[in-house]
Length: 367
View: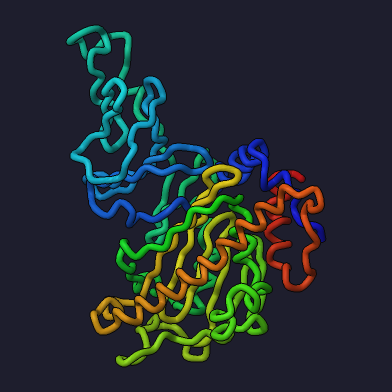
């Protein structure tokens, strides 16, 4: 099978079509609710060339808005941080409450005249975006047309129920926010996903990972909603105080099993008995992507000082692995400009998950 043509990696027009046909009409992850850690915290971001802002209001509700003033379209919030109770445009000082409503329009009718009868503030609030928080992951549906979030996430919950049981998600504990793993890469977002989908490159790119979880121990799995790999040789992190705590319902026969699916289109997951990592692939432009990764350990005990070294080792290990991938993704992006390459020839065995991803993309783009 031939891979996707170069145009789908180095062309802004096709990137914007993806925004409409893929990202706008379904639930997609854009980050983490913990990025707005307390009420009053605001986090601006760019997603598919769209300026967005994430807000945690004073009722502790996480909201997402288009980050533009309704007056002249100026970006509303430039930097993340804790605000008092309003968002004020730096251009003409139009001011919005955390629920998006427009509450002040200074001098709209002339000097000192802040209201006019022909202008209805109630119809000029910020444009909100449907959002849902699932285990700290923040999902949005840009055009509001997606099925319920419960329907969207149900296949993944069912997949993981055999590993972490019924209450596994309740045991997740986020590592310190200042230990997040972040990379900005000059490449198309799909290349990050495709690289994650296969273990074919482990012997050449990830020598350390390949010793712990060899390529031959990875089983490729595909389904309608996601694709990826299962490793059958994961080793629990261990130190002076023993292993990191594991999920209480994780079956002992699966302790060496780790699940690495991609929840289409852009959420890369790694579930092990003693921790979970989540990498959110955030497309910025057709040739620019941001990776935001968080590690979650299991239960309050896992955050105790005696496990700090083990947590650090796990974080350093994954940071090293993802850093090794960075140069690979950049190299593939450069190759998309070549006249001697236009999609490549995918392996019928090793690239089976990538083939499934390409088929999924092609179906949504009608190609």
